[in-house]
Length: 82
Image 1 (cartoon, rainbow, N blue to C red):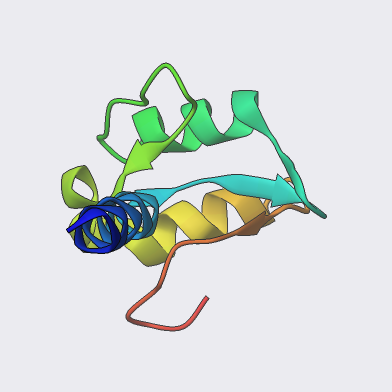
Image 2 (cartoon, rainbow, N blue to C red):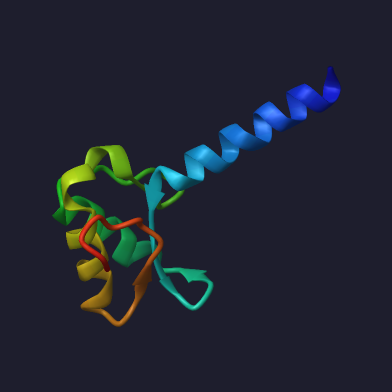
């Protein structure tokens, strides 16, 4: 039973991470740029500097482009290729 609970919690954490977008420089999260791009594309950044993908679902590629404009990368899965 404990293994089942651990697996459920782990899967939930991975899904939540997959549902958020961030701007990165290497492995460092660029908090200010993430928040800026999120707001720019119509989302509301979380206090953890995530941009909920569900809020910008039709603008995921635009979010990634916003990150790239400052020479950062994005972890968003883009439908039109980032």
